[in-house]
Length: 270
Image (cartoon, rainbow, N blue to C red; front, side, top):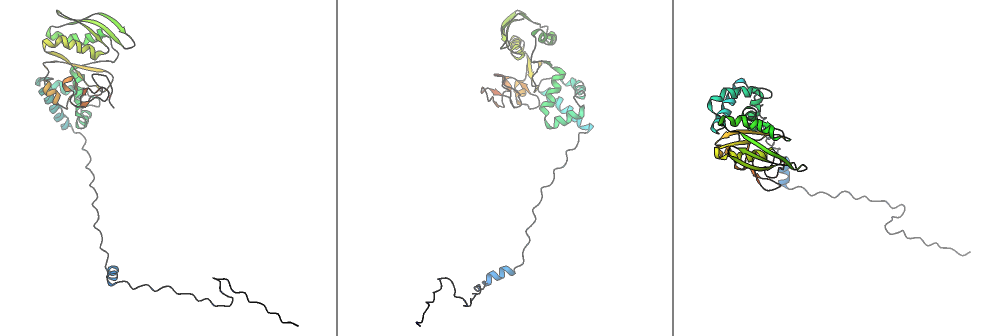
């Protein structure tokens, strides 16, 4: 009987034959660290200096009765220096401050943070008068003429007519003594400006006070000290002479630092 031989299969490359013991290779020996590295590891850690925490701001001291007297005296003295009142009116000014919304302490608090708003408001309520955005000219004259009577002056308005109701544009004739002037106006600011042109020879002017609202406020002054008025931040008076705080973003006209709107185009600022 013929003998048969079987060819032994070669194991696939990468595979070990059965029964062949596996020899695991141990991890490679790490190189010993240098002496400097060892010294660094053994060196004790130094604590970082703690950062100083910012000190908390001291709480604002609430207004005291003595603060009101000081604020009233300071504000009134500034108004006298600006030519907006006289020294003998300090007592009357103090009474007006007492009528401030919230009382004297509220005035002091506002005077500390926004003195221009606090003083302008008291001045307007004391010596000025307010006119709503929508107004009638005869109502304005009822405010203007009693103040002009001290100088024996009286303004009359005649021939009032509408030019364009949609634009709120009206026309009238202003009469002051022997002076006459045909005026066109859209709002009370336009009309008061025309009145001031008639009053210029008398060295009188109705100054516009900022109200930070839609209404208007005016104050009659004789020979305004424009150099001082333009340089103060205590009272906000709106005029070409006080337009030193920048430019209107709409028309580019000069405007004041604390103005609410532009005198030229009427744009309201944020």
